Length: 241
Image (cartoon, rainbow, N blue to C red; front, top):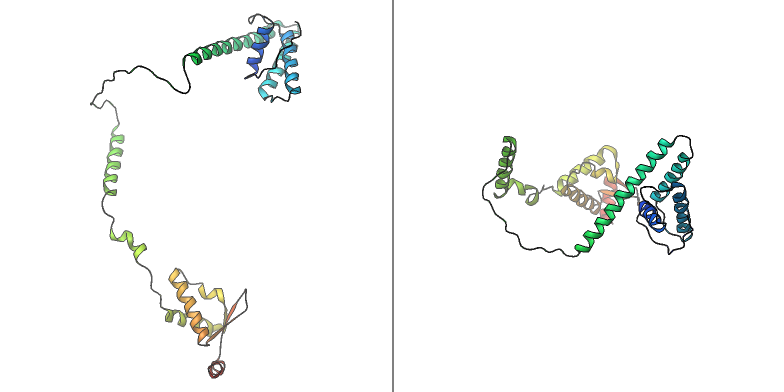
């Protein structure tokens, strides 16, 4: 087989490359010489690598397959070699036919537009489907549910939006003083431990401000603050100041 000199092309896959080599060397696809074809194939892979072309794993898998077929052909058992050769020939013929049909379809159709003459369509009003009783039941339940969704919502649906819990600041003042009377002081965060709603948090915060203003409690520290209950002496002294 003569050494080929041609412009490097981009192949869609290993079968495309094999068909290219067969056409260039004018070989019979049904009676190809594996020993000659594998040398041409490996040479083409080396040229692709030298030109920094991307070589997918499919090309390398085919190279390993061809080398294996060449090795088997040298063994004394020709049956396996002929079997592998027939499999490769079948794949090449199938790929060649698909490539030929793709060219024919591509010449007749355009990927941007497709047009055809108007066709007469007969419309039927009769329902021709076949449904099980369970499918009919599910369809009925779904239709009833859609009908219910069209009804006005119940007043209870707006309860979370228009209603809110009312918490008095006085009740939170009493709660805070009771906590401080037991221990004398408490961490600032602990005064909010029983708050479940936003109104509880707001009322507690206002109660703390009111107690600080009236000099009943004192807030100590910056990051890990502590709330301390002030005695009566402290209260009178603060009032006199």
